Image (cartoon, rainbow, N blue to C red; front, top):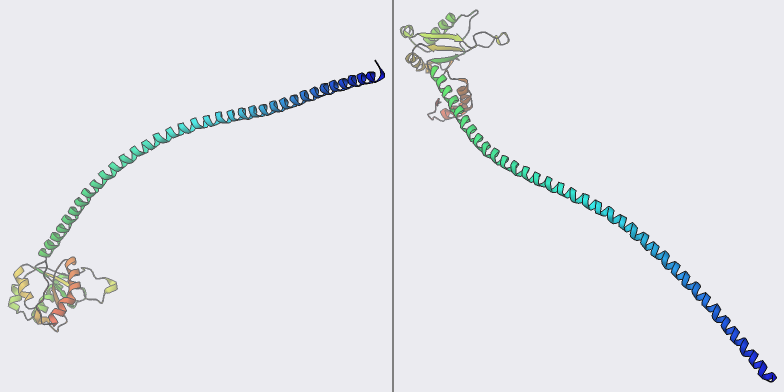
Length: 256
């Protein structure tokens, strides 16, 4: 073998050695890269597992809460059913009370109507019991006046002012003659108290009433004796009566 061939052989051997060295070096690097990738994948997988475990815990909590909400809904549904039942019962009660109230109102109206009718009857009855009585106004009082004195004053007034003869007056009998009120009020001592004269007979009262026109201009007045309820009505109607009479119209008070 010559020198040139030796050099070429040596060169090939060196080249082959370097090539093998490069291949050996390259395989170690790839293994290191594969290990790193696996470690990263494992870390990511562990992270995902941890996240899933956390989600499982949240799901368990949500499931527990859902169970509680379902129980609450059952309680609410039951409460709503009870409330609806109570409302229905209340509605039935209200309808019943409304019906009863209408009945009570009708009965109350009837009762008020009966009371009004009884009151009117009572007023008419009282007016009837006073049909023999008259009221005399502005008949002068005397000091220490007694009921007998009052009757004497009434008889004198009827003879002198009403022009009733003594014989007629002797035929007239009074059941009672008195001042109203029966006792004088010291604070109203100057005001003349009216006189109530009750005749024993209705005909005597009518006879005296026919002479009332003779009192015109004397300052003394006479009226029929009515209950206070009728007197109040007469007070309201008197201006109408007065105006009618001024107009030459026939007008008078009618008790009923």
